[in-house]
Image (cartoon, rainbow, N blue to C red; front, side, top):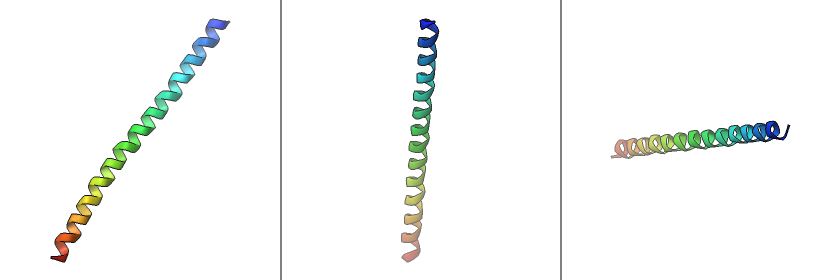
Length: 50
């Protein structure tokens, strides 16, 4: 019984940690894309003013 409980807890812990890492990675990737888009918009506005 103890082996099953330990295995189940390890499995659930691994799944939770994996989900947190994937969420962090997606936010990081989205933030980089947003920064890139913002830089292009600002560059376009500067070009329009001149």
